[in-house]
Amino acid sequence: MDRLLSIPFLIFLPMLASFILMSPFFTRNEIVVRRFTKGFCVFHFIYAVFMLAFFDSANPYLSKISFFGLDWIQSMGVTFSFKLDGVGMILTVLTSFIFLIASISSKLNIRKNHKFYYSMLLLLMSSILGIFAASDMFVFFMFWELELIPAYFLIGGDFSAEPHPEAKKSAVKFVLFTFLGSMIMLLGMLLLHYYNYVMTGVLSASFADIFANPIPHQIQMLIAICFLIGFGVKLPIIPLHTWLPDAHTNAPTPVSIILAGILLKTGAYGIFRFNYEILRDSFAVIAPILAVFALVNIIYTAFVAYSQTDIKRIVAYSSISNMGLILLGLCAMNQIGLSASVFHMVAHALVTAGLFMICGIVYLRCKTRDINVLGGIAKSMPRLFGFATLIVLASIGVPLFAPFISEILTMMSALFSDVSLTLKLSSVFALPLLILSSCYMLKFLHSAFFGESEADYRDISVHEFIVLASITAGLVIFGIFPSVILNGVS
Image 1 (cartoon, rainbow, N blue to C red):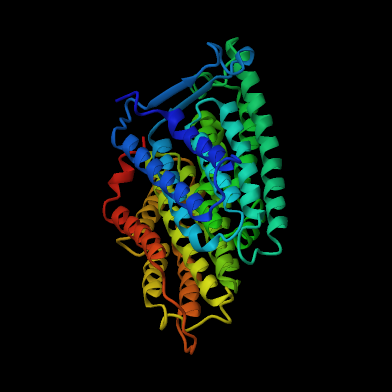
Image 2: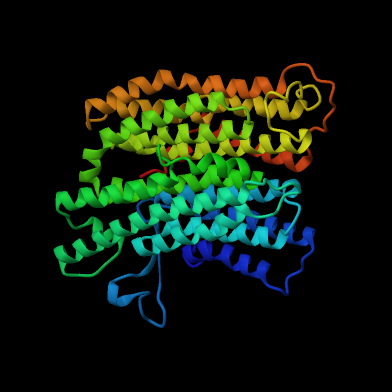
């Protein structure tokens, strides 16, 4: 069985599929390309679920790749090694599912350059899976940087029938922000690598080796700040967030689903893996300040979201607000907070995937995303309206949906935390302020679907129904049976 459950197979198979699609020998036929990608994503999701089913938190999956018997950069102690623990396994399955959803939703949204689009989609999938599975910090960094290439082309590429004129500018902005953060993060990795060598006399970039050895407090604080800036851009933490609304708004709908559903989670995962686990002493000092930033994320972006007229920008700003909730859970520095953060990563991924899917469907039918123009479409699209109502209710934390569980757990973790009074106060203020999400999400629902309209739009197609039904089912299942996820967080 161990031979069948392979981390390299899980990570690099999408990359291989991407190269096959890019090959000049592979057909350019749109239907064949789309079905190949969709079929591959179905297979990959089944394989990921299969690995999850046999996962044992006491014995996480481990793997190491050598090159002719040598490590990747042996002279620097860098090994091509991977490890999937509980958090990594959950996020890996989530990644596979979101990319499956994105591949299905691409059918009506992607009209040109299909080979290039789907190959970049699979390459991005491989890069993100590598981030969640890497157990060497320079391998982590390699995948972190690799994701910039496909993400740039997916955001700014010419794939839609009517590509957004600002898409390329948004792609450049995303790359510049992320690359600047990555360089600061790399500085932190080099310092961490160096001081681990100073303390032990052994060159190693393995998470396990670095975690086992203490680092001087002042140096640890400097390294921690470098990591927070790098990961804070991707999370994003205000004021490092300005790339996100433009990227979400101007990218094709399936790409927006991936950006909000998975790409933002790589920032939260980085904070967990480096700051929360490795640099825990410095994180305990910084956590109260980060809790204030998390509160600002929740409050500021909620007001900005309410002022938006583009439904896609409303969802984009709501994502930043929800990232504040994930950050608040990590700042609690207890098991409840970690469980809440990971659970909200899953819940938020499902909610934003559904909301961006709805935005894409509305735009395809109505040719606008302006809430001042939309209205009354519930009459001609009752099935879409039904799914929109359920997903909006889930997003505002109504009981029996997954986000309700993570919101309650986040507040509990902060109140029970021993970090500081600041963190407790942040949670006390954050709980009532979550009502702001009800304001902008209900505005989204009311302005787009209610009212009088004589226009007659086609309701959702079969493949759109499958996507929305799958997302809604996930929100309900995890809302009723949260232990499915919570038991996997170790």
